[in-house]
Image: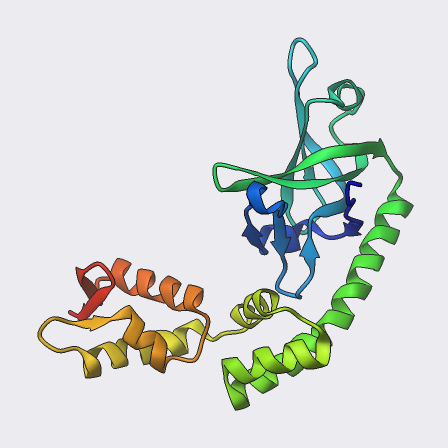
Length: 239
């Protein structure tokens, strides 16, 4: 029996700003996107205006670029190219499909595509905004816990109180971290802890109470800005 994921209504902005989790075929884990509101998306339902369209000469491949006023995304198909061929630039369309990735980029693989009217587009967006409003309350509470009790306690509360898995909770926490504040903190720590040979990333992670992925992003920014340099892989010194 093949499990079919429910298609979740979403605005394009939340897909674009979400975190892409690639598929693992050996573990039968599909490609998904986790939004900053903690929603896990495998199959999605989007509504927007067709702003670009392409159909191959033999009609065995097609794509459309869709804009819903929050962002732009590409939807592709091999099976429904003839349906895409019927669409016009400017049409408002409903697209249902699975998230797919290729070369670290993602798109929506079209399963359903049809023209809808402006009323349906408004209905869809109101439904999405309603979900976001509910999610914002949880984000607000987790932000409070993070600022007062740190990452580990926040992850624990997210699991026990809201049933949010650790991977999802970490992505939610990343969305409200004050990067500039932590950038200064990390730079100061490197200066204080470095010896002649520098300070290891593992040592920084033992002290800094934030997701490893976010620390790595800040380290990359500090390297790009020339404020630190990498002595050896994973070992840093302040300039």
